[in-house]
Structure formats: C-alpha cells, structure tokens
Image 1 (cartoon, rainbow, N blue to C red):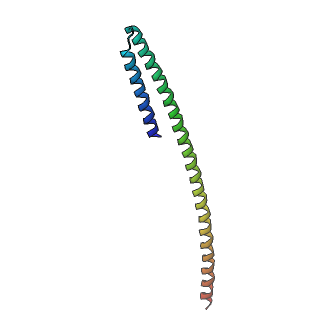
Image 2 (cartoon, helix red, strand yellow):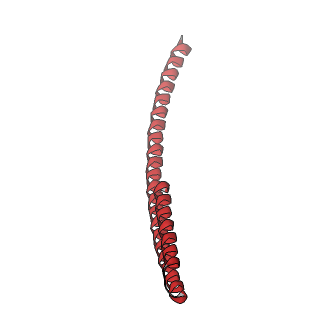
Image 3 (cartoon, rainbow, N blue to C red):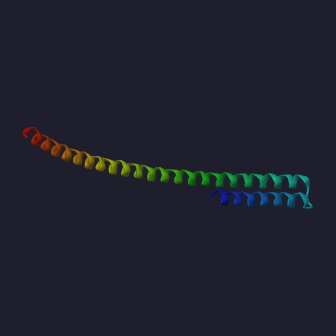
Amino acid sequence: MSNNSNTFLGILAGTAVGATLGILFAPDKGSNTRRRIAEEAQTTKDHLAKEASNLQHKIIDTVSSQKETLDTRIESLVSDASYKADDVITSLEKKLRELKARNKKLQKS
C-alpha cells in the first residue's frame, strides 16, 4: 500500500509541477496566470485532502479488521487452553485415584 501511495503522490506532484510550469510559460497576463496557479493549487490541495481521507479510511478499516481477527484468534486460543486444562485436570484426577488405590493396597499388606 505504501508503494502505491508513493507512486500516486509522485505522479500527482509531477502533474502539479508540470501544470504550474505550463501556466508560468504561457503567454497570458500576470493576473490571469496567478489566478490559474491559485486555482490549480486549490484543486491539487482538494484532491490531496480527498486522497488522504480515503487512505485514512482504508487504514482504519484494515486496523479494525486485523483487530477483529486478533480478538477471534485470542478467544480461540483461550478456549483451546481451557479445554486442554480440563483434560489435564481430568487426567491428574484419574492418576490421583490410581495412586490412592495403590496406596491402600500397600497399607493393607
């Protein structure tokens, strides 16, 4: 995404510079040239603001999506760990019963 943004900004900057130079070298009155430069600068500013806003929304959407994915994965890990903990506890309780039974046999002997 960064490479695309840099390419886009480079093209946009080149276009703005080219338009400005074209206006400066065009045979026209100074007041008309200044007006054209101001209009072109405003248009470029508006376009950049729009693109920045679009980029911001894309970033927010991507971060939100990644957060939801991370939250889901964390919930899954916690759930898996809980089931595994239950399995371990069950296994330990079974071993404890076996040890108690073996201990009773040894005490009777």
